[in-house]
Image (tube, rainbow, N blue to C red):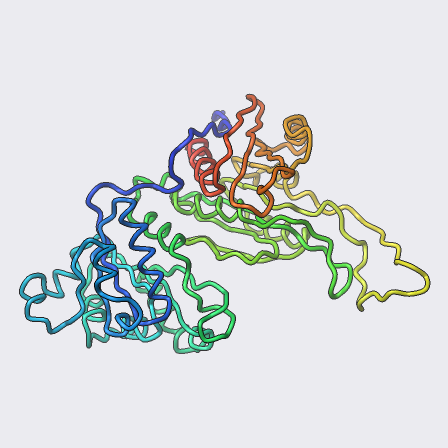
Length: 418
């Protein structure tokens, strides 16, 4: 009989992302959109991580950021003109298109994506995209109507079929005053996507593995406008999903109602109730691991009212609650379809270790990640202090950003599955 994998015993690390090998270089194409200013912050993040940045600024992009600011941050020359005699003599657009390990388009406007999808080449950016033999990552940014237009969606589908990586766009407010999908992903998310692509297969120990991650709260309806829910932000679960994807896993993220961007490379399914979350998790099996981070409501009303409840002389209505399905326990007892590793989370306000040990025994999972949500800044914040509880003992981690906690846990999961 094969030896059962041991729960992960991850080691601390100073950074939540893999650092690529030295001398890695990105060719950064800056398109013409308001979001072009984010390319400056992205350049700063890349240079800080030791990644070389060679900027290519379109004429439209130069309306939003200057060549001087881009050159200063990149510490390299900015290329702008297809018909520059000097640039063509020194570099040439063919060599330029192959001078980096990765081509990144930030922002990827509707026009740039349309040109790339149809093989048009009438300026330096589009010619470079057509001539490159390197991987391409695009971060779309445009008005919501432009993004949802059938022509844009066809172009995106074509680009993906051609092997182009897409990060974003997010939902949010836009410079035009509208709200919806089309807002460019934040520089940190694009940076993570770049670092993952630069890291290569050697830094993808979870390649070929499938991991289910649940995140966020559930919302159990009382009536058409009211729900029973909790304060979970989903930040820790989303960070874990992204960290696992960067290590090469195929991640199915089952998310409760939260307003967070989908991590790069993650397959996201949105749900509201605990019953819906369990259904999606079971449908996603088989999986190599399941990480149940979601704060699932223990109870739900036995019946949701069909109309909004009103105040009346009779006083508040009497609600009868019924128990929700136990997602963690169900996945831990899935028989032949049980994931090799099942990780549960415990959000506690007292007796953290004792409650986590009891939950570990009660649920039948392999590991419990417990935290004290009564600490300031944990629930809804960007930092976390966790305790790892397994049959082998207790491991207390120092307070750290949730992204770092996620990366450390993901490495431990990779070690366990290997």
